[in-house]
Image (cartoon, rainbow, N blue to C red; front, top):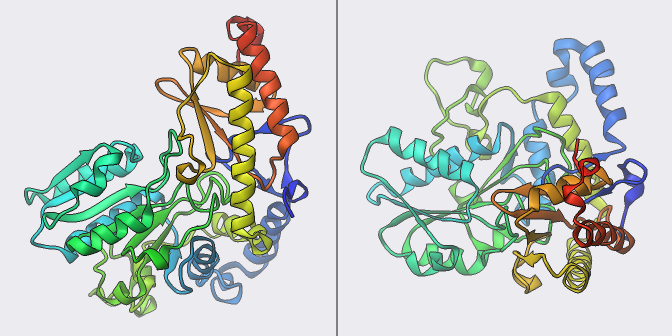
Length: 390
């Protein structure tokens, strides 16, 4: 049943519409962290790596995420940051297609993904091209010249979604490698990573998955490709026998080869505990609730705040789990909302984002948020010094 507010730490009187940027703290995380710090690190010390399961944690947590994104057990591993995982996936994709020189992405991709691609292609110095097109042009640009297609499935600004199945099939038909960034998708709606046949998927875990600030990222490799994927970052924990301490690198014969450095055990533990929330969540029920709440939010805004424009797709089938509006006063409006305990966020130049997360948001929260927003817009309260936040 949704919502499940009782599972989260949510300050009294706060309406939190920013779970698409940082999810709230699940109540079970703090006692679990206390146990790992005091009981495991404090009591077991170095023995914790093997007696407490720390060394296996990246794969164990990867399996928790795999079930949320529609992937097989043993195909996802966690660790490092999303930017590192993007780098790993793209570098491996280029190794798979050595005779092709074009990486295709779109203008809706998250800038950090594009920056990582630019840095990698420059360092390789092999006449690679990063080709950035409009989102609606991606499908038509995929041909036999493309080495890799690298896209964020749900646009971080507007929530516009790509068709994972359609684009993945087009990439496969052309011989290109498909890489999906699921940062704004994992935990927002049902995904079928295995079914779409993509070679790689990556994502962060501090948004809809509620893993905490700076929570480790994840990477998926299609299982039939794991043993032929070349790790560009050949860290010691990606070695087949890391504790043999050999001078020559031998990649692990599985997704484990995408491990790089030492697992951040405390942060990984917070994520592992946070993911237990999902054990009783039906993703289809969650998505239906997200659509219903988003539709109600949009209809109320259009009726009561006519100066705001919808930036997200109107069709819920191609919209993620956040709704974006535009206003020339967007940043000041978001500050005024925050001053009255309605928390969303702002993206330049004029995007006001509201995360619709049915785990802890219900219809009365949506209506209360719109009440505040209507008051701010109708009375130009964004101009008031009392409305500045913090």
